[in-house]
Length: 470
Image 1 (cartoon, one colour):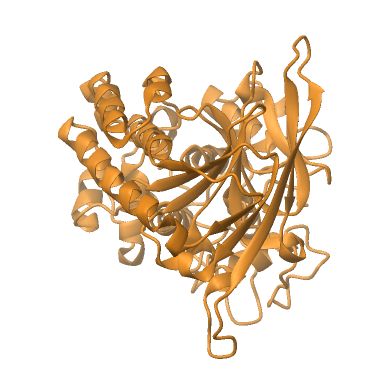
Image 2: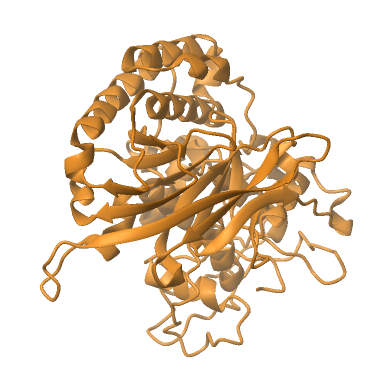
């Protein structure tokens, strides 16, 4: 665990940048991290068919103002609503304690999910919503069993569905969702092992203590992965009950809080899990003594990320938002947000040993292709990271991990947004991050790509990324 704030590093550090520290003042009001749109989730309770799903999506879009339809955060919420409608409409019951997930068993369901996905996306755009990412086609399997094993077959990699959700329908409810493409490493046959493969994940729910003042039990969900670790996270969705979601965190018996966020469309607490453990939720508030006078957005971002163990402060309960961010800090931050910290991986860098507080995050980031070193043997995690490098990474994550589309003619787009020039190698990624409202602008109107960024600012933009996780 890093003693400092942790974040993720870039794959494009070829030379040590010459940092500038211009006179611009950060304009936090320009950063889009909050939504103003109201999601009419009551419409989703009536969804039981493709037609009713499309009707709900249309009514949600019509309830939005023109400004909301153009706002990056609000339009993203509309997409999230559409995805919840698709998942509710495209479903079938599987009561077996062993649930086989394959192209053969899900072919018809996946085809329907794809059709509804395309029509839902068109419904949003026809109603003026600025859709900037792929709408996920989710196929849902429902079961009343409290314990089941998912047997994922290698041919599921050919499915048309983007996501598979397995939902327990009896109280206390929960669901497990995954992207088949994420498990290609485990499932894809190769020359050495040409036979079809399977991946088994055992899931068991038990009712824990009741919420204070109620008779509603808090679920404990046991997840068992092969050898204790998955190469990519699955999403566990829990009903927060009467609790205020912003005070909750999903944690394992091991004591570590998982990356999680409240999904306002499904009204669930969604946690990204990749390790065997028993998970539940509990209340956790975090306070840093030196954030009391900081901008409200920065404080909200830092406290939310600290609650789910994405960022950390110092032993004296301070955060020091003014300190510049290093490569190692940034890597750890991003890998924790993505829920892709694999503790079984080894670092290839001579200067990143197991004594390094961010060892597992750096090893995972290298393995999953998110970073490279300064050379084959050195990562140089203590070096500061530039603003251009930070947004290049965020843009790649938005595009490759989350399905966002790069704006057309990125260079022309950026010339309208900033008075200076963004390095050509990073223009596509910076343009994407800018359009999605994640760039902290300067009062000078410049992008100032060679500047460093401080811990408070980086926490704010990573929180914006965190809000888009689905």
